[in-house]
Image (tube, rainbow, N blue to C red; front, top):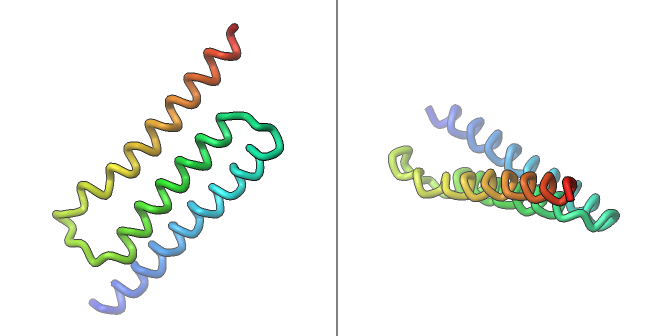
Length: 92
């Protein structure tokens, strides 16, 4: 059982690293264009990475992980709001 948890922890860390790398890419695009959509995506991926890091590093029981998923909710809400703001500014 412990071997499975080691692989799970490794993969959870790899996913968190992927989120942070995506955030850096969007931050680079934001620095070039100053488009707020890229900044919102960068912040959303940071939130996703933080949530995944907490799940990977803290040994939280499955039943008590509900509050960690609020990071994902905020990240996706941030993306949705940024897309709506971008579409509204494109119409005017």
